[in-house]
Image (tube, rainbow, N blue to C red):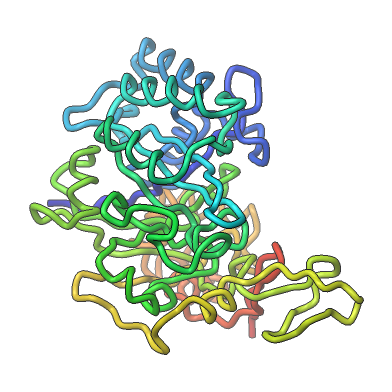
Length: 387
């Protein structure tokens, strides 16, 4: 067994000269994603969550023909023998009463992903774009994934926009079949302490993924897995904690740094206290924060962690650290190679040799989550408070 760092939710902005994820950066192409994830971030495994979109599949074929990608035993594709790639889809499904939620569907190989794409084309208006609404219920979507031996993940479960708990239902079985859920992605503004206030989530493995819409955001949140090899089959075993495979740790922002942690007025962005009916600006519409929504749906006053639950490590990415500008970051990359090496291997003394003691201590506090935060809300990230 070996430790593997994984981000299972990264989007594609453009492919074949056309948009794939409308809100994602144009520079977030498949080739750039793979190179950045492997060489800059230093992660070992990534799910390209727009990997079933036809333009992306065409680029995957091109990379296979060029030898940049190879098919891997156990499922998945291998990029330059440095990064395992899983192809997936993010699909939007209407809630049973109102709202809509996003779900992740992962597949072992290109052929299966293409077959799923063919089915999606029968239930979506524009399957060339990511995260499109499907004209089916979540249970049927789960059945289609299961027929292809795929994995079904609840995406950013608590967020106010397209989160199952945050936007649709209070109980999982109101929308999905719990027996067909392979893992629950916590999403920005939530962590294990918050999610384990829901009794029905005790049996599920949690994931902390970036939902990256740009290259710098890849591995903003990520997971450490213990696997025999980084393959689709081994990941499935890890999500279900079989044959000694497991998710060994989740890494993510302090929840208060997330841009939907607390509630805010939809018009002006002012904080919205629980029980408030109207903002001082006169608006009566609120963007409900993850924390405040959790107060509504939880059935435990305090978290109860099951024995299988790994630690959740609060960590601040380098780009969030005040005073650590592009020049200093490049010096760190020149010295240590990747962000994973900076966050997990470089000692405080080694960091100080590169950027000085003041920044080194700031980086060390950020990578251990030992920082104070001004909470985020209404789509605006929180801020680190530096002494």
